[in-house]
Image (tube, rainbow, N blue to C red; front, top):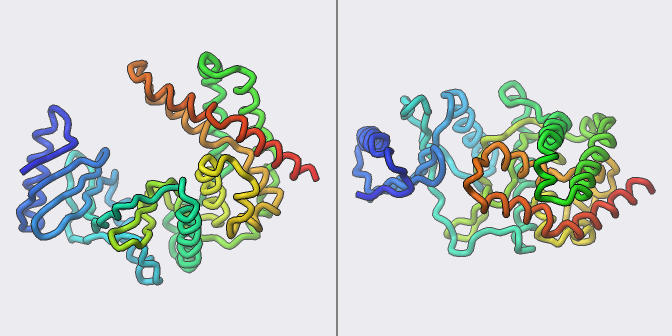
Length: 325
């Protein structure tokens, strides 16, 4: 028996978890591996599965029913939960058991153009399915309010502005804030743009790690913790922000991709592309978590800000010109 990823003092938790799992499934557990906080890979001779903790029973049930609804509507490119009458409860966390998808030797990456296009097609399929689930889930899931989220992100960044300027040229910090403000100002009258789009269940976190290629080569979409209700364009906007650093901030390359060839004709979408959401997000996260003892995390956020800044600015300048035309 092995257990990996645990910290000193975790022994009691580990043995309680082991005991509960063996009683629950009547199987011998061979290995428990912590993947991240409240997420574990459980190995036995019979099968492997993911054990994931939720802060409430309601959140677990939403995840269970949503992934089941996806399957029933024909979206099979994700995992399913193993549903039991009684959940596993440890330290006030409710744990659900999730199907383990055996990964491919070739990992999914946004650095690969083919992978980016494949993920975009999978997202489009996901929204075509979740559009049919909105009538049910609009009473369960919150609406996504992009302006409120970004305003809070910008305000927090401004509160840290003087500290950030110790590491980043104040002129660049000023430019970053100006891009954010211009994006928010242009987006103030965007309600018609969003209301004209059909509502779907948004994924909410289209980062590369939420796409997984299985051992058979099929691409899966995973982790629905941040699902909400809104037009698909909100996730497409986040997707663009995620992939642009891997495309050297090439407007032309983004324009050649399906979906974006049309969206880039929309002034409101262009305005939202000006928002430097990744820079603001990572600096805000850095100051929430940094205790002064991890210089690597500081270097990472500085690198994120400066490494492609000239290319990013060139992209933003082109977007601003297109908005004025």
